[in-house]
Image (tube, rainbow, N blue to C red; front, side):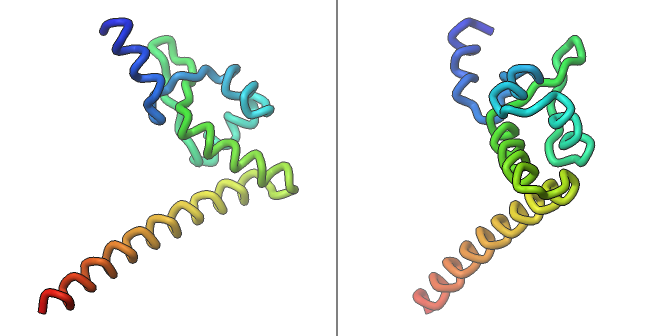
Length: 110
């Protein structure tokens, strides 16, 4: 891998670019908070060759949402469940919209 390849990955939302310490710092949270949302299976950090947790920007956005809910008084397990349900709802709405577009096209063609 060349240096150019490595820099290109920094734009990838799924590239695990952040260590646990840096991720916690960016979120204004603790490493324990990140471990807790990992244990709740909200996010699963990738592991470096040395076994250290690494987080992507996408995972940090999810963790930030969890932090927001926890800061509002929601227990961490409930916050994780809320986020999972929000994600499932968003996916269902996307599929429904896709289905409606397809059905509209079918009607227009007949």
